[in-house]
Image (cartoon, rainbow, N blue to C red; front, top):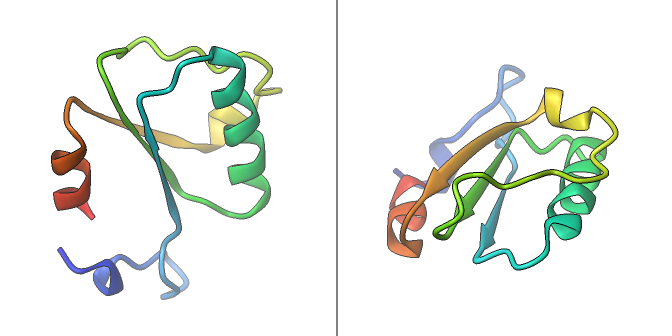
Length: 79
């Protein structure tokens, strides 16, 4: 896929965040809160940990889609 092909329901480019090899669970909660505030639709998470905890997300996780990948190359190909 070409990044220009990813559109939201309003026809605007869809914003995504790619997170690689997260080390601290507090970091993902902060990322989720910021992402929701800026209208990001998806967070792509790359790494071995499929059980990422969103500590401190303040229920913003409910508005976000998480997609998990084992390898960075897989996430890049998804985009």
